[in-house]
Length: 558
Image (cartoon, rainbow, N blue to C red; front, side, top):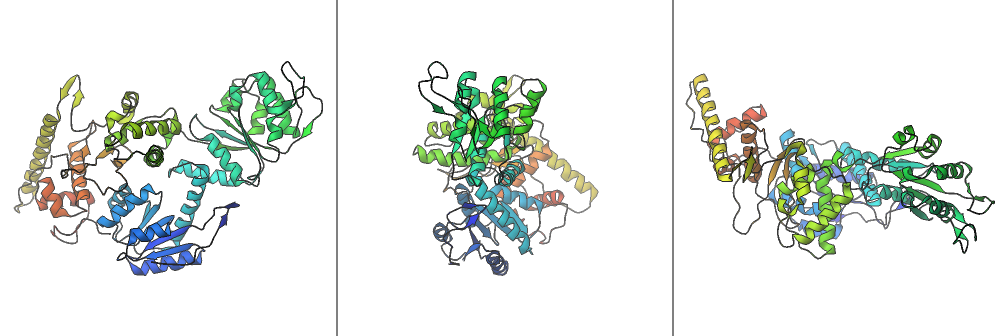
C-alpha cells in the first residue's frame, strides 16, 4: 500500500471536516489505476493505492477511505465479498468494467457497486464523479439524510446553496421526513454555525403560551408571570430559530410574527419597548401551506415572507430505492446499540418494506427496524417479523408471491404443487420452441430440457439462503446479508401476472448470478443443455457471442 501524506484537516463549504477525504484505488489494472491516481492527486484529493496481491482488507482498515475504486475483476468472488462488507461501512465502491453491457451494469449495481465505467475509461469523468460523490457524502453526514435517489440529491444541493445566506427558509414535507435535520444542517453550514440553534414546535402550544414562548414576557404581564422571561427570538439572537409546524400558528400570532420578521425587532408581552434582533428563521410544515393560504387559514403575506427560499422533502414512498440503504444504516445503528448480532434480512421481507407506503416516513421505518433487530435476535429477519399492517398494506402496487404456500381465489396451493405446475409449463414452452426451431432449420439440435426449478441452486448445510425478488421498477432485489457473510444463493420469487418467458429469464439470470457468469455451471444447475442456455442468452442479448460454445467462458467478464 502506498499513499500521499494525509493533511490534518480540510475545510470545504465553510465547515471543518476534521480530515481530508481519501480515495483508495485497487490496482488490478495498473494502467488506468495509475492515471486515476495522478488525476486525483492533481485535483487535491488524498489517494491510497493497493495491490490485489496484498492484504487489501487490512490496508483498507488502516486507510479508512471514503471511496474505493476497483479497476478490474469486479465479479471476482473476493471483490464481491469486499463490496458487500464495505456497504456496511458506508463506503462507496466504484469500478471499471472490460465491456459495456447494460445487463452486467445492472448485475453490478445489485451486488453493491455505486457506479461503473466501461474501459477505456475517461479519467476526467471518473474524477468529476468522485468529487461530486465526496461532496454528497459530506452533506449526508451533516444533514443525516441518507439516500442516493435524485430527490435526496436535490435536497442536499439546495441545503448547500441556501445555507450561506440569511433569507428565511420554508421546509415542506410530511411528518417523519427529516425537516428538523435539514434545518440543523442549514444552520451548521451557515456563517451562524457557532451561534444558538433554537427549535420550537409552535403547533404544540396554545395561543397565549405561544406568544410568551416566542416573544417573551415581562414580570406581571399576565397571571402567573412571576418574573421576566426571554422569548425564543431573543435566545436565538445572532443564530437560527426553527419554527416547526408553522401552519398551526393562530391567526393573531401570525400578524405579530409577520411584524417581527419585517421589522427585525421583538416586543415582549407586557412591554412597549421593541428589542432589535438578528435571527434567521427556518420554518417547517407538514401540510401544503399554499393550499392553507387558499383556504383562508394562513396569511398570504406571512407565507410569502417565509417562503423566500423553499425546500421540499419527499416522502419515503417517492424514493423507494433509498429504503435498503436506510435499513442497512438503521440495522448497523441498532445492532450496536442493543448488542444484537445481525443475521440478515430476506429478500421477501425487504420487498415488503420497499412496497409499503410508509405514512410515518423515515421515522416509522427507523422504529420498525429497531423492533426487528431486537426481536429477531439470532436469526434472519423474515416476512413474519414484519407487522401484519405492513405486510398487507404493501400489496397495493404488486405483491410478490413466493414459491411456497400461495392463496388464489380462496384456494390454497402448496409450494410443491405450484412448483410442479411452473416446471411443467416452462418445460412445455421450451419443447415447443425447440420443435419450431427444428422445423425452421434442418440442423439437429440437442434436447432442450427444462428451466422450471424457480429455486436456484440450494445452499449447503448451515448456510443461509439469499433471495432475489422481481419487483416492478426495481429489477431483482437481494436481501441484506450479515456484514461478514459472502454472496448468497439466489431464490426467484414469482409475481402475479408474470409470463412464462419472464419466469424463465429470471431463473437463468439467478443461475448465472450464482455461478459468476459461467454458462456451463449455470446449465448444470438449471438442468438444461449448454446449447439451450447459449441460445436463450443470445435471444436475450440480441448479439452473436464471441467464444462459440465454450461453456467455461463467463457470460460477462470484468
